[in-house]
Structure formats: C-alpha cells, structure tokens
Length: 219
Length: 219
DNA sequence: GAAATAGTGTCTCTTAGACATTATCTT
DNA sequence: AAGATAATGTCTAAGAGACACTATTTC
Image 1 (cartoon, each protein chain N blue to C red):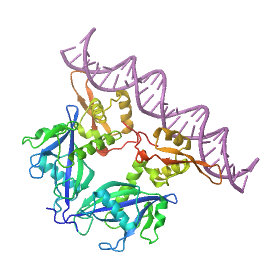
Image 2 (cartoon, rainbow over the protein chains, first blue to last red):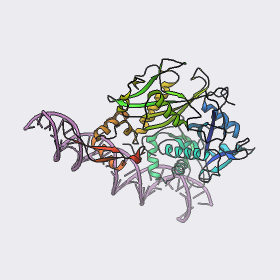
Image 3 (tube, chains in turn green, cyan, yellow, red):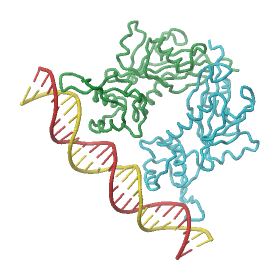
Image 4 (spheres, protein in one colour):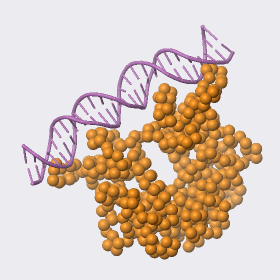
C-alpha cells in the first residue's frame, strides 16, 4: 500500500551559548550526504519506539549522547523531493537544554553552530531549523519556554537576558519584574543566593507544574 | 528498514452551523472499523501526492467532494497502539469552510456533528478533534483565522459573532470595532451593503494578503 | 566612598472595558 | 413614531513603558 515510504525523526536541539542561540549538528555516518553536518535524525523503529516522541528521544541519545528535559514535536516535513531515496516524511522535533548539558561531549559527537550562521545543510534541514527558530521565538513571547535554556537555579537578571536573546528585543527591568508574580511560573528558592563581585541576587527556579505555562499576555 | 509503517492523513474540517462549531465525519468503507463514522482520511500516495498537504487535499476531495480554502497541518499522531494494523503515523490536518460549501452534498457523503457532542470515534480520532479544536481556539484569539468560517462578504456583526462563538466569550462591540483598523485584516467593500429589516450594514471581506494574519494582541 | 549590580518606586500615556448615544433602516 | 440593528462617542481604570531612585555587595 505504501511501497517505499521513508519515515524519520529529526531534532533541532537549541542552547544558549555566549549569549547566542545555537543548535546541535552531527556528522552523518552513512549516505546520502555521508560525512556532512546535519540535524541529528534517524529512522523510526516500530518495534522499539512507543511513538514519535520516544523515537526522537532515542535518536537524540544515540547520535549525541544527550537527553533533553524539554522535547516537543514541531512539524512533519514531507514530499518526494526532500530526500534522494524517495518520498519521505520527517517528523521534526525541537528541544531546549542548558549549555552545561553539552560539556560532557568527550567523544566530540556533535558541533554547536549559531542558528544565524549555519553551514549548508543537506535535505531540507535549513528549512526545519528556520521553522524551529520561528516556533521558539513565537512561543517564547507568551510562555515559560525560555526557562529550559537556563540552569535549574537562575537570577531574574539571567532570566530577563534569556528572554531578550530569544525575542531579540530589550525588556525593561521594572516592567519585567512586575509581571513575574502575575505570570506565576518562577519561584524564589529560600536561602538560595547567588554571590558575586557585587550585591548578591536571589535565585529562582521554574515551578515544576509550569514547565510549559502559556500566558494571556506577552512577558 | 521500516517493515510495516502505515502513513496516513486525516482531516478535521470545521464549519459554523447554527452558531455551533461542527466537524465533518465520513462513514468508513473498509476495515478496520468499516461502516463507522470517522474523520475523513486515507493513505498517502507517494506517486501522486507532492507532499502531505496535497495528500490531505486529495483525500478530502475524494472522501467528501469538498475543497477547503484553508487547510493547515495540525500534528502527527503516532504509535503502535492507535491502529490495529500496526505502528502508524497520521499526519493530521484541519480545515475551515463556510457552511454554504457543504450544501452541495447531494450524495450524502458526510455527516455534520457538533464538536461538543461527538459520537464514539475509532482510532484516536477523538484526540485529534480535541487537538484541532484547541488549536483553532488558541490561534483564533490572535489571528484572522475565523474569517474562513464566514462567506466571502460579511458584516462586522457577523464577524464579531463568529469570534465570540470560537472563543466562547462575549466581546464588546465598540472595543471590537476600534481594533479592526489596527489589526488591518478586513476591508470594507465599496457599495456592498447588506439590506435587511433594519438599518443596512456595510459588508467587509478578508484582505487576500492577510489570509492568516497573526496579531500582537488579542482581538 | 566608588563602582557595580540588585531591586523598587513613580509618573505618564496608551488602551481595554463598560456603557451611552446617535444614525438609519422597516413597518 | 416604534422598533430594531448599525455605528460611534465618552468616561474610567488598569497596565505598559520610561526612568529615577534606593539597597547591598566588593574593592
């Protein structure tokens, strides 16, 4: 009924490094496009994978050794021209991690590349990244999504800077802090204080029950 | 590589009838679930379909005879338990039409059912409809999407009532009309006036270049 | 005390919301 | 004129934005 239908998952894994939005690329082992940098991806294993999300988790782990606390289906890219092997469907996902998750890459299994300075990518992976960046930006304006780019504990200044990076626009400190209690997605951690060269800052965390909180208004 | 991977498209076709949000269901011809009411859906034809969107158009036309001016990919539902034939992926889509498009159903190829009073549906079609309703409601709050439930020409009162139905909340007439010029997605049609028993109303149309306009703020 | 960052307060201007008013048609 | 719907105007209160100010640390 479906003679040659290729079904894969691809993952756009974002992180914020050096105040720049970057994504993880892996070097392809096999043809087509062997040796080329591309999004981590692979076939669905009908026997092992409960669903596409589980397949994405498995593929991400096997290709990069990484596990992401936030992983969401993005869009399914389809057609007869995107893959030289034939008509294909790629169920694309995107994920967010804090930079510290990436330093355990002893075997150098992946590269980190700025999303604004991508190399030429095989298949329609450039379009997939573009779609993921748009989704991340759009959704971040009115949700708690950017928290997943931060470490478990963070200061309000770090939180604001993260939103500013993703949204690409400066935010007023006073306005930002006034809204936080209403949006109600972060909470102060008692006795957790960030010490530095200057006045110490209260540390906050994402409320576990608000991992993806959607707001009526923008942050 | 993918021994038995079933790939289909399913379509949630919405319309507004009698001030109620309804969806189109068809009676299945073959097993599994032959004779049962279900979402219109079918296999992807790798030879004929340029991509999944084209497949959804073709399937909708072949099962119901309908063509929708607005059709968008929703989400891909996957897994080994949703279809008794094996591991499957359904690339679900949703579409919006005005009620008048549906009256040409001489052969009675489909049923119209309120989304709040669905019969028991096969597969995970109930979840697909629920997902589509949520997407429609969420997206309608800050976009021109609901216009596609209206005829080509409509009054501002009809437009407001459509938004109220989808959003499930009353809107203030004065506020609604004040925002329209800013949101800039409808335009008055010169010399087009709706006559009735009372004061005539100016007719408007969706601006062709704003078929899916996204707003910074809610309508 | 200077420098730097954390955190709060105040003013203004925009705008949503509620509601009143005017306008134009039919019977 | 009455009744109904279309369309616009007005007042108020909430909130975003801009910016000043205070607080707490290190050197």
